[in-house]
Amino acid sequence: MNQSLTLLELNRFVREVVKNNFPDTYWVRAETSDVRRNANGHCYLEFIEKDPVTQNIVARARGVIWANTFRLLESYFQSQTGTAFTSGMGVLVRVSVEFHEQYGYSLTVVDIDPSFTIGEMARNRMLVIRRLEEEGVLRLNKELPIPDVCNRIAVISSATAAGYGDFLHQLASNPFGLIFYTKLFPAAMQGENSEASIIAALEKIYENRDMFDAVAIIRGGGATSELNCFDSYPVATNCAQFPLPIVTGIGHERDVTVLDMVAHTSVKTPTAVAEFFIDHQAESLARITDLQQRLVSIARQAISRENSELALLSKDVYHHSIAFLSKQNSEIGNVVFMLRAYSQKQLDTLRQEHKEQVVRFRNAVEHVIRSEKHRIENAEQYFEMVSPKNVLKRGYTITVQNGKIVTSATSLVENECIETIFSDGKATSEIKNIEKWKI
Amino acid sequence: MTYSQARKELEEIVRSIESGELDVDKLTEKVKHAGELIAFCKEKLTKADEDLQRMLDEIA
Image (cartoon, rainbow over all chains, first blue to last red; front, top):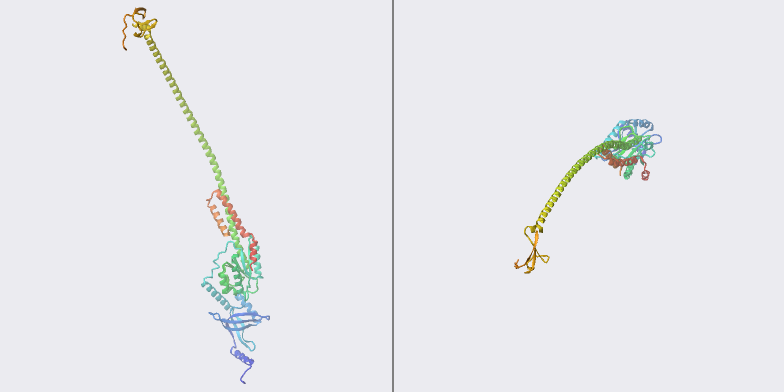
């Protein structure tokens, strides 16, 4: 039991051993974690090292940067790297190794090499970018079309950020009278929670994605510029695969973040994001206005062309009508002339025919008269010839008995007297014999 | 009808009129329709839709 030590004795011993064995300061590569400042301006943190494959923590040490050192290092680090000294960074720090009886093992930072962090950040960005590329998502958001009407904008920002106010003001005061609808999805844009907070906001927007045309991720006006979350793989892969185009304005001066690389469009400030949307909508409006002007001008041209064609046409109609009428006139004249000539001819023919008919009629009448006259003359001759006087002269006689002409022998009686008349006298004779003939 | 459809139709009309293939009756009809499309498109870009903003505000 005499061999035993008190804890303090042991820790003093360890402290001495450490002090003797680590007399210098040493450059150490590590990742920062749980970085915090206390009221006195001292910075407390954890240094960790992760297995590059499994990402499991394989080493850990408490660290401290005393206020007088931290004031100098902090501003130097930020000016060189463009980002605040914070958790999750790969750093190269010069430390002294301490062992304190009460607080144990810790590293006291006396210097920092920002170029290592710059390299680390770049390397980290490269790794994230390469991973996104391998997964085929790096350019997905860039390939999304910005719709013609892009005025429903989901905004991821801190509600109190000055940049958010600038953004809204810029949209509202656009000179084209364009309308924008915005909805804020608040997120912490810096600090430990920023990564989870941004992803949560994206998820919320995703649930309501049909109600938006685009997403704006903006940040500005804050004092510190901590950009780690914008280089993180989870944020980047969420943004890259987001179904709406994302426009970033996260207000930093150094090289682009991974988020800027995967976003559809990346501009410097929230105001510039607003300008981007305004320009896009103004372009849509200009296209419509252009179509309108083209329409008005061609419609006007078409109408005036139609008008002049109409004028030509009406001139044509006039001329054609005149020509037509005069042609008709002369045709009618011709017809009249022809008709007159034809009528005359007809008339002449009729007259001629009439004349001929008259002649024919006269001839016929004369012929009739002549032949009638001839017939009458014949008849006269005949009658002359057959008159009893002439008949008696030619030897014929007329037999009369008792004053009556006897034409048959049957009526005669023997011994009676009959008178025989001649043309120039008569004789009375007694009938001696009657001989009757059969006829 | 969506804005894109309206704009596409509008472009189609302007093209067909510019090609001069329409007669006056069709032209008048088309110009009238184009006017309606223009008004529709401009409204989408410049006229505030309070219902829409309210719906966005209501997203929890």
